[in-house]
Image (tube, rainbow, N blue to C red; front, side, top):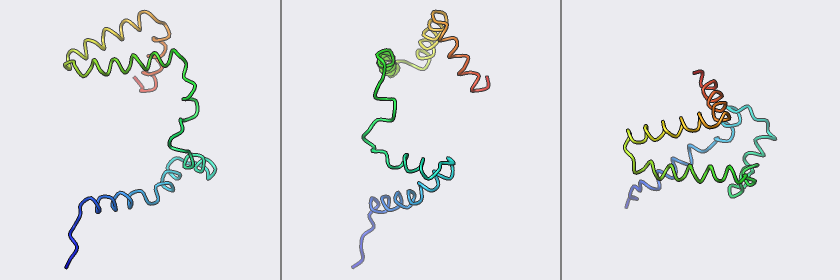
Length: 112
């Protein structure tokens, strides 16, 4: 009697084949030394990246607003999102010189 084809088993094997040699390809593409690659691949997945565990209260507040915006976006039409974004951006750019500087850096990196 022949074994039945199981798509889930096949997909799992395909995923494993794709991952074989991933570390070597990543090391070559990123130009990482053996020591750097060891640091990257030995990191405990459950631990935070360096510097993310000491978030300032201001950054935390900004992240809270970001989450709030994401929830609001779900309820808006495309035109509503565009209008909303325009108003928020204009307010921030007009109210805070640091926002203007951040925008300049952002667009300079994009070559705009």
